[in-house]
Image 1: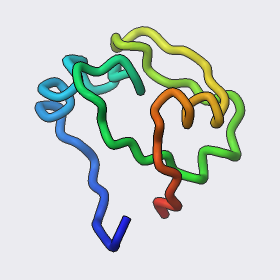
Image 2: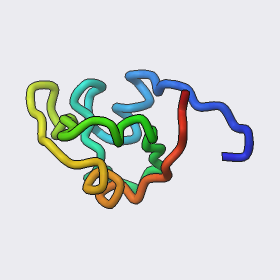
Image 3: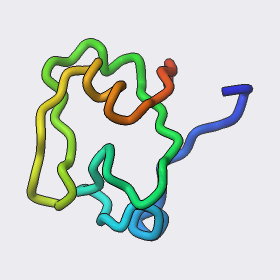
Image 4: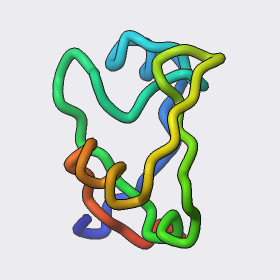
Length: 78
């Protein structure tokens, strides 16, 4: 990513950009496309459980499904 730093989004930012509350923000279905970073460490987990648009809903995906769904960029975040 060219040496740029990554930081956690604030709840206000998440709500404004996705229309969803933090903790329920799904990886897709946003009003506008988002640049998404997928941590390579997530490859070690199967399935992945991700929020599905509300604070009390989840969906399971494989790493490759998450990558395809988000058009994400893989990055070693650690």
